[in-house]
Image (cartoon, rainbow, N blue to C red; front, side, top):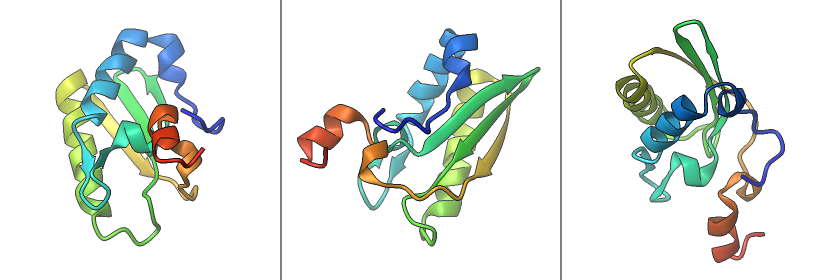
Length: 111
């Protein structure tokens, strides 16, 4: 991801679990943009505390009409994939194209 503010501590502490989360997030697609959450870079932080996975996610816009649906989909997809409790917090960071997957953003001519 392009944005330095993404903080996936789990990638360092449990790479296998991190990959499972990534795979689960690739199944959740923003219905307006047609891109999955990994491509959009919407999950900004991820860490494990005991048997709980803590995630901070943002939406593409503060008033995203699909926000509640996306939050539910993310929670269920990740919980099913990792068989852990997921604490999901919605952050206030404003999404921009620099948070997208580098290759996709370049393909779109955004970076």
